[in-house]
Image (cartoon, rainbow, N blue to C red; front, side, top):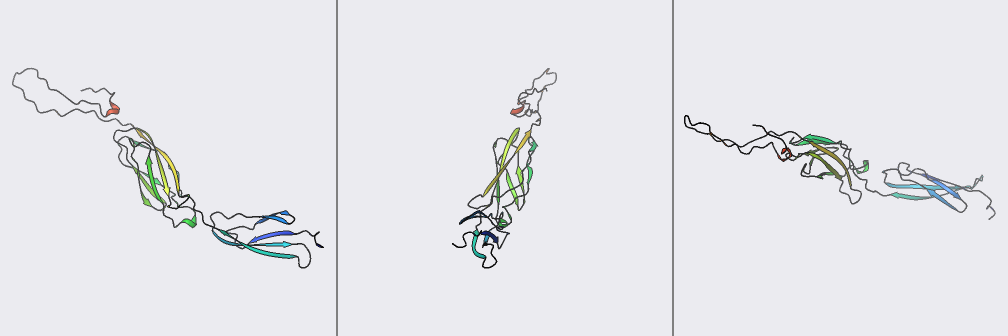
Length: 220
């Protein structure tokens, strides 16, 4: 009680600022508040030493230590954005690069990631396949025959952990129309007698092309 008029300052230091920086202490009187923040993506145990100093010339300081354990929490995997794509009708299999595939920060580099892709309209583009490993993968898709229009592809990466394990991005593919050649059925070999006059041969199966070209006129 005979020292109740003294002011006491508290400070705190961390023995590993790569995990937790030196905390701050606020407040006054008998109760104070120590604040700390774990460094991004850091895990492990750090010791914090708190020192009280009453500003006197002797016996002025007193310290206690405590530990803080930063436990690992899974970070979601990621990959770079994929630009909108375009392809011609009936163009066959197309390839798109997927870059920047990552399981998360450096402390999760040992995780394996799997990528999948789905189409919102399989009548235009079926669900793509994804091949490769590591940071760069290849997505392959094929426009459905005679299909035109725009489809959205959703790509999802999964690092197989219990929480925060997936990340998704989408991109569009626009399939532009390409004219298909008109057609008609084969015509069988014909025969006619000498001086038989005008003969008629049926031509069947005349078509401007697939259903999306049904409005075209065909001249033979």
